[in-house]
Amino acid sequence: MASILQLTEEALALPLEERIRLAQRLWASLNPTADASEKKVQEAEALDLAERRDAELDRGSVQAVSHSEAIARARKSLGCE
Image 1 (cartoon, rainbow, N blue to C red):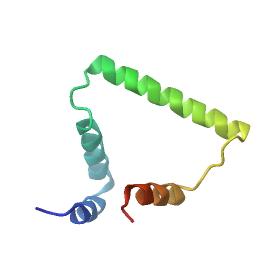
Image 2 (image 1 turned 135 degrees about the vertical axis):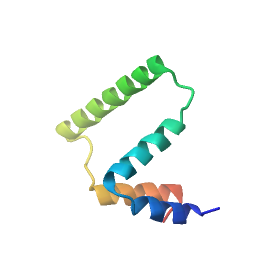
Image 3 (image 1 turned 180 degrees about the vertical axis):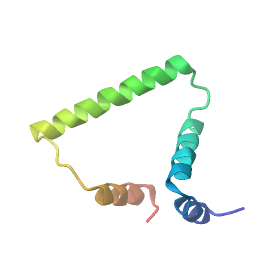
Image 4 (image 1 turned 45 degrees about the vertical axis):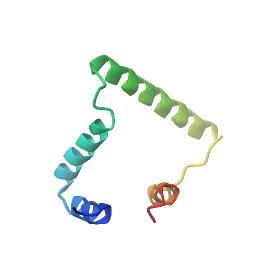
């Protein structure tokens, strides 16, 4: 069986459209039992969170970080450095 590192490298080598489809399938697999109404609630909650975060940025109560910094922090917190 391929390692996570091998799978990641192979996935990152895919064309953009295929990476998007793969990401969507992986994301959906995290909650396979959610029905349509649950998914709508989850989407509404995600949108609400995004709007709150945007307002925090507008108020200056939080500092934005670059994409590369956010990814680096996420990888560090997951032990994937």
